[in-house]
Length: 140
Image (cartoon, rainbow, N blue to C red):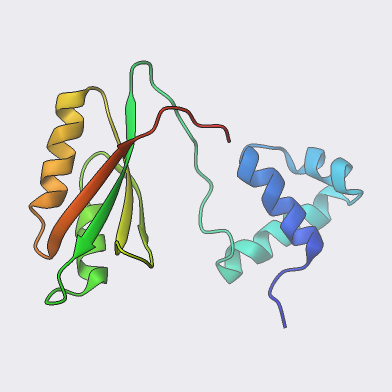
C-alpha cells in the first residue's frame, strides 16, 4: 500500500514549487478545506515523505556547480557522502548509481571559492575522482 495518494502528490507538487504557499491557497486549488491540507501535510511530515521546508536562494554573481564523485571501494560510499555534506558551500548530496557514486551540488561566491570547495571534496578519504560541471541556468 502506498504511503501517499494523488492528492498528497498534488500538495507536494505545489510545495515543491513554493514551500511558502499558504494552506488556504492549496486548499482552493485542490478543492479541499484548509484543515484537510494541514492534516495531510502533517501526515506527510510524520511519515518522512516531506523532510523539511526550505528556501531556494540566488545571490548575485553566485556560482553553482554539480560535482560527480567516484569513491574507492575501501571506504563506504555513505561515509564519503556524509563528509561531503558537512563541507561549507555544499547544498545537496546524493548517492547515485552509474559511473560515479556521489553527486554534490555546491555554490560559491566566485571561481576561487568554488575551486576551494572542489579541492576539499577531492581531499576527502575515499574520493578517487571528480567531474565538475558549472550550472548555467536553473529552470525550476
